[in-house]
Length: 469
Image 1 (spheres, rainbow, N blue to C red):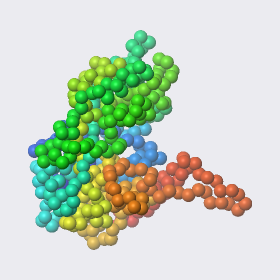
Image 2 (image 1 turned 120 degrees about the vertical axis):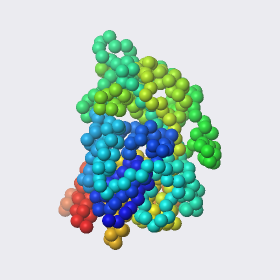
Image 3 (image 1 turned 135 degrees about the vertical axis):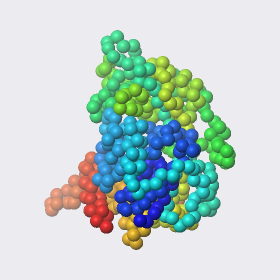
Image 4 (image 1 turned 90 degrees about the horizontal axis):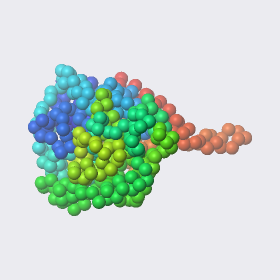
């Protein structure tokens, strides 16, 4: 049995390992925990969700929803485990993170062809064994330095923030007509999902303005404090991923920025007034028992005392007990189009393939997708088969081509992390003109429906052929 190695037991690494196992390969999975943890990790499980417990929208007319559907259709282990451990979150797929990680770990460790090696890998292997490097956005300094040496270019880095988690029974609830002003109420935006998937903490105009003012004045972790040993060159400026900005950085962009962002009140009728509040902080259930809630969109680099002070200005969170404070950590990724070949292998050492956030995909589902596709491409290469990535018309294919740099506008050489978007998938045109009639312009909804229909059709044809090999 041919042997392959996967370095990194996160989402991309676990999915890659599973897909390689399914294709008859013996897999050595290397995971540094519990010997060493990154600043964002708190568990020794494989497939730990270090940030939110949400995998975002499950609606296939949303790009990430379509990506989920495609992965499930193609036998993704991690998406199957997510479906098994789902907790209510409207039309989003959120999971009980402990049960999710345990399910993934159990499936992998029960496979007879998998060997788990615990301990930090400090140098990229050069023994010729085909290896998938899926060390994630927090690749260790030693491994990143070795990668920098191999690539011949300075690695890229940005900073990412996570949101606090609070105990459910410390939130002031609107549980009757005598509930105090500002008490939290259960409701999903526009009544989606089960209608009570989110706990909403309303703010009136005065409370909102006081909250924003406190954010702007709050004591924050400095760039110098963010720098770890040997990373002083990254201390001068924190470059954030735009899709995960600290809440205080968003507040700096204008008084109403948060009201049109994570604190938007649209579609949330306060049951006491029948109207939308001025602003709303939404809490999402963290576990199946509903004992912990995540502050949606409230990722932060504030110091812990400042977090307690600032978030207590939200009436429903005045006495909140924090299970986890928000934090900020460094993410590292490759200039993938420049240093990786068409199979996601390192040009400087082709025995090394890369998957996950280190390749410049952003998000849980995108990392899973990257691990999935990289594993399939590697298995085909080892079997002497030609390169056959997912079709460009699918979300899987669009994300793969993003990491190839083929979707950049002409003249744009910058490569930055990105979530899956509809811009990664070729558009559909308007209706053809029947004889004697005017062209009918398709609505946005019609175009999305056609994109989904085309993606499903093309994915099924590709997957049938791939699965038969």
